[in-house]
Image (cartoon, rainbow, N blue to C red; front, side):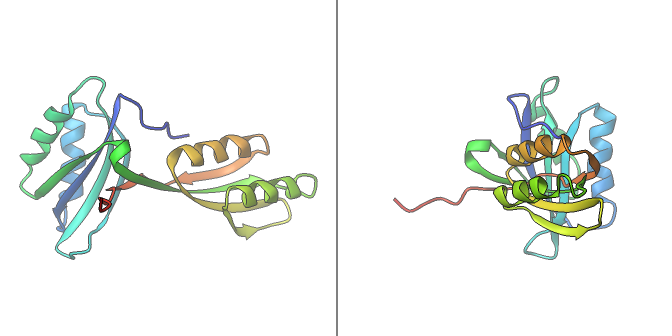
Length: 168
């Protein structure tokens, strides 16, 4: 289970040139410096020349300032934005297969409905469920599914964008 961000975790949104090897250079920089990455998600941005890397990083032993200085030394880094939880919208995707034979299938389906998840595959003994949402909500769903027996689970890295400013 991925922990929710705490005061020791920080989300960085890093805009980079969309070129081969950029992700390897970014993750390699973290490895060389001993910086811990909690979550990592990468995808092209609205401009095909750039990709956005969302990192949830552990700042317990190293400051965000030190990490951003090291990232800016990488030639393909264009922009870095610190996303504080109160100023960002964060989402994640969870897929899990849970044991759900005839004895417990109704209970599992009820929880799927309560969480607005979606069943994406079914067998006589199990169901595979997909849920997208706030990381804490996914943690709660995962915890509830554990009592039925999680067969397999996969969570994406966290994606985040700054909240849009509302007109006053």
